[in-house]
Length: 406
Ligand SMILES: Cc1cc2nc3c(=O)[nH]c(=O)nc-3n(C[C@H](O)[C@H](O)[C@H](O)COP(=O)(O)OP(=O)(O)OC[C@H]3O[C@@H](n4cnc5c(N)ncnc54)[C@H](O)[C@@H]3O)c2cc1C
Image (cartoon, rainbow, N blue to C red; front, side, top):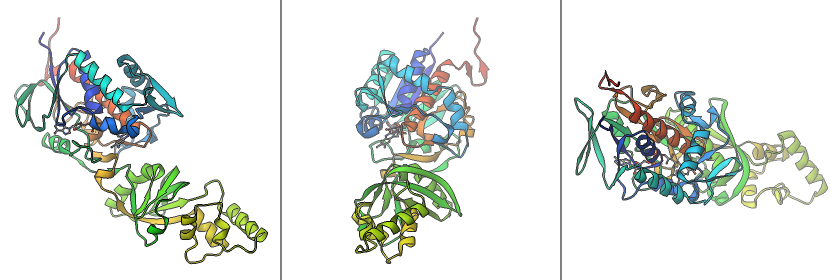
């Protein structure tokens, strides 16, 4: 029996995984990547160390307009499957408080081992090949690049998103998906710094402080996260801000007013903080309200919190619920991922095959799922890539006709 020809568009995290899985299942795989090498974004992950997944896996770690569909998909290639897969190709993982990294602490080892396994499985890796069209033929497809037409029985679109300034993240995959009949939930920056409205930001720029961030809109708290907040000359950044940023950006896009409430002393409740500050004042009556914060909060932050000379109760309120109205985010270039993309309802969750264009499979960030920080976006890429690769190679149905086997 002739081998099934599988063409993969994009040599990133999901495309390389798809290539290995499809080749293991006996597919004749060609992978097209428009950069001069595979996995450029992968090399930048986790500050070059690659936080490749996380022990804590819950539906709430993945955001999508399709509710818990990402979770359903992830069950098809789970955390355990992922750890096993990486162990098989030679990536020994270590656990840092639930965050898994390659023991080498080098993202380059993950990229190198994926590519080695793909080459060993005879995957043809063609770099500097920009795919500009997927052409549906009577039987199968032609994948059209600037220089060549690649015939394929099955195509896996794993072209990633528009996020980051890393070369290759041009969003051209969205156009390819749309041309194949897919709808697009407008991609927006996520895991991104947020810009605020106000004239005090230069005063607190450069401060990094532990705190809790609450995303408030329409009178309710939509999301919360805790960790090191970075105060900047345009607004706020840092991991807890990243965690709520995707939702904030989408709400703003929908015309909703969004405010972040910053809690700079999450270990206190407001009343407790007020009486603590009052007793400090009684012990040291010579201190101004601002001086009461020396030793409690960074000085630049204290300056902002005491603007307008609040009394003790007003100060406690500001420390616990400092409001920053959010007007937008930094650009795609400064985002780590995108929210939005191809809706999951347009994909078979068991196989990742398109319901719009049978024979086409989609994997990775091009789909409408974005994970929180902590290895979840790569987990999504590994799981969807593995499912797409495996099913594209195994699938026995072609152009509506069941292949006969004895
Ligand atoms: C700075 C940074 C740090 C990050 N750190 C982490 C982390 O530690 N943990 C984590 O889980 N996630 C992290 N992420 C997110 C993670 O890297 C992505 O979610 C993941 O790489 C997405 O995988 P993908 O295969 O969908 O896309 P990509 O890895 O972006 O791969 C897509 C590939 O397709 C190629 N391509 C696109 N269009 C075409 C075309 N038309 N023709 C040919 N080739 C094309 C691109 O060049 C690219 O190589 C980080 C992201 C950034 C930017």
